[in-house]
Image (cartoon, rainbow, N blue to C red):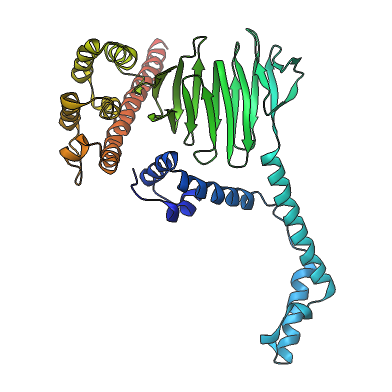
Length: 392
């Protein structure tokens, strides 16, 4: 993670002009740094406003007037003194009109991003907003609850940055909506979010933590006891509670518990033994039980499970941290600039550099599994085609 501020990189970051690895580092830095995040929010709002200004075509007379004015000034050799006052009245009027329309566009976008409600569409059944049953469309105002029963579903438009689908038996509340922050509270049930805005703009509060999007798609569930389960299908999500944080990539899941916060993320294809041991390690109170569970995690870990082990570095101490370090290093040695002593002391910059290196392992394994899956699909399809030809 960046040890210094990233304000000089924020403009390029908002425009998508930085490399993927650096973009992730900036996103993660913004989660923890209030100063950089405030600067990012200002830049982001300016970019969003500029992108949404209406595109207008200038009238044909505008170019003709400009050419005539230039020709006139050239003939009198005063081209360098060409000024606004020499333009024809209709040219000045057209320019004023353009400024007026642009200003109205800015005001329209600002009012749209800051209006105190979200649009809601009924998908099934009879969702309720507050005490009222929804029609086909509705508006969820700040402070209001949206609730679905066993046969109801709804879809929320999160300003102009994404959508959230609300499953049956779910209760959510709109906490905040403004240009720099959109926030829901999920009290119970299940929701699916698709966010296409830059990171750190959409948040979901739960009884056991806050999900902060980093440009992503994910599902989030909360049971009646307040325990949560986050599953990411695209991008990254930061799951946080106080000083405890888990970075969850696509294809991974993370549980969270009231009073404890987020557990340790794991990839969905981890073994049952690995996942069971991790659940006990994260949420069981007995320290004696944690020792054999850590043994299972270390012995059963694949290269892909270094996602989990990397998070464990900051959640164990003493000799246990040494053991976790050595297991990761045995799978993927730390890159240049990352030392054993630095990792054991939880040096943030070194941990981030190693994480960046480990991410290539996670991505490569994802590609190999996908490749093997497609081979099986095509082999099966070709087998059926050849079988049908043989019958003929």
